Amino acid sequence: MLDRLDRILSSLLALALVLSAAPADAQGTIKIMYTDPLSGPFAQVGDQNLQQFKYIIDYINGRGGALGRKFELVSFDNKSQPSEALLALKAATDQNIPVIMQCSGSNIAAALIEGVDKHNERNPTNRIVYVNCGAVATELTNEKCSYWHFRMDAHVGMKAETMVRALPKDVTRVYLLNQDYLFGQSVQRDVKTFLGKLRPDVKVVGDELIPLGKVKDFSPYITKIKASGAQALLTGNWGPDMTLLIKAGMDAGLDIRYYTMYAHLGGGATAIGPAGNGKVRSVMPFHENIAVETGKADTEGWTRQFRSQHDFDFYAAGFRTIFEFLQAAMNKAGSADPVKFAAAMEGLTITDMLGHQVTMRKADHQILSEYFVGVFTKGVKYDSEKTGLGWKTETTVLPKDLDQPNTCNMKRPTS
Image (cartoon, rainbow, N blue to C red):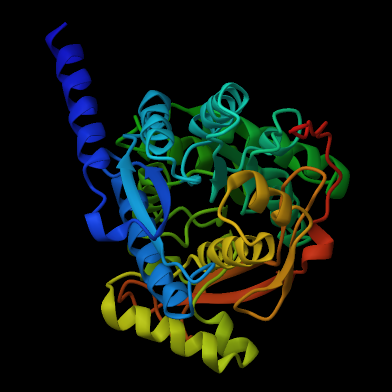
């Protein structure tokens, strides 16, 4: 009971801090409520996201923001709990903030979609848009799609297809290991689907789900993977569930290929280390050597400046795309009113920092952008986390190649 009381008091204190955070001279800014884990086992992910957002907002604001107003980020620690994210939503709507943004945790995203829908239905003069910057369970823009939800990252089905297509022909035995919640279950299902469609010759020799954020020692799993005879591990794990898994594999000398969706995030390079040269791949929206590989000098300069200020890689090109979408939609609508800029964002196409045309698909509010498969290797210009190794592109997938069908039955507001 005392623990529960402490949690309630902690949440009320966090809510009070957010409500009092806006400075008196910031009334002209366009506020964005950002909520992700900023404490607990997944805090590193949320903190690095926050630092990249601040870097991007400074850049966007330096170019006029939107409607001649600057963007202002208001952060809220959701502790990886849906109930805390709903408190962030309440804080945002109490302040008439037009956007809530969240990246980590598809279970949290599902709660926010439902919460935003209910709020907007009950409060037609105080609506809010949910910008999803990284919660990627496929169903969120299929059967759970919402007019007020815009996903700015490729969903699991898109990533799974990319991952399966990247498997070399001589890999015919794979092991699946994923987190046991909405996202991990989506990875498990979609990877199997695309293996069946594209690589029926591949046999799944192991398939298990682990409790989210609970496993501290992955060595028993490594022993099972080794005993299975797998040639490759396919995983959607993120945060400590990814870094501890990879580190255990490297420490045990497990000589297989690792196909991941998040090894390129903070802590991944350190966990892999020099022993992982050429072994680990990640399905990713960006890495710092892409600008070098494609001759994009302006993008290279932009990420080099980030490196001079931070001790981790810039990996969030998609975050800059988010603010360029919001900027373009609000300017097109001539308003920061959620009803007006949401309509303007449907079907909108812009050019991203790598020069690709990216589109917010109207049918389901799923972004279509380029994606890459990178390998962690020596011999690249920019290393990661001072390991001497960095990411090198092996496969580039264009937006049109990720345009998978959807099952969304979008219900648009009538007023």
